[in-house]
Amino acid sequence: MFGSIGFPELLLIFIVVLLVFGPKKLPEFAKLLGKTIREFRSTVDEAKAAIEDEIYKEGMTSQLKDIGKDVKDALNIYGDVDKSVKDFGKDIKDSLNINGPGEKPAAENEKSKDDEKNK
Image (cartoon, rainbow, N blue to C red; front, top):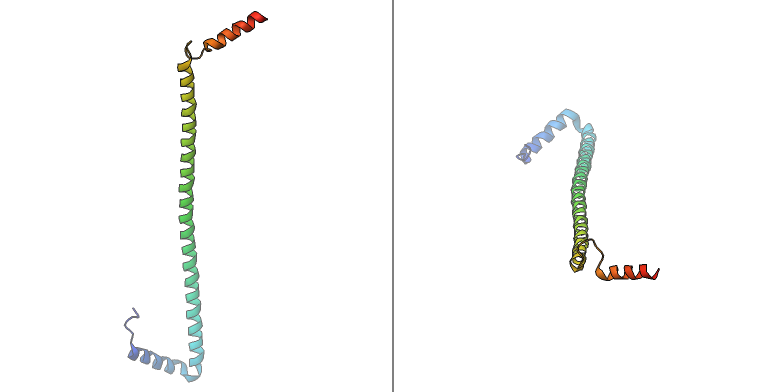
């Protein structure tokens, strides 16, 4: 919108402002205009920084959620592996047991019988 304003247009605006406000009020007007523009820029910069902070926080929040999910998945895998190892250990014990699954091995049965005889 204001990109096509050149030197002749600025000179025309300056002359109109000079005629409207007069030479005595022109420095006050320029000071007020400069202060207003400065405050506007600082407000825009603050708003921009606040928006960028919120975007950054939102990005961090989603990353933390993803990390939490990964940790839960890793713990579930550890629990599954631990259970599989325990089940595998039971299967090995049962396969080595001649008497069948859930029963005591023959050597333990003989020890139990010997213990009963000694009593």
